Image (cartoon, rainbow, N blue to C red):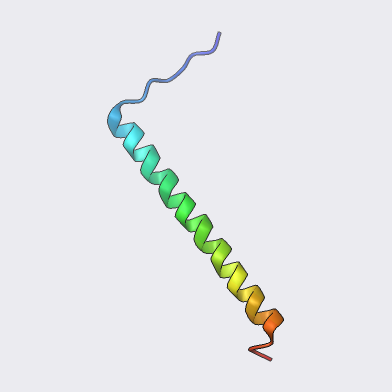
Length: 46
């Protein structure tokens, strides 16, 4: 039998905020890697 954990509202809000923060960090890393790739391929810095 699987027991589920019931989260209260504060825990749900905290989890959502953490997920949003992680999403923003991952998105920022993607943008950073994209820009670094453009710079290396474009030959801006030799």
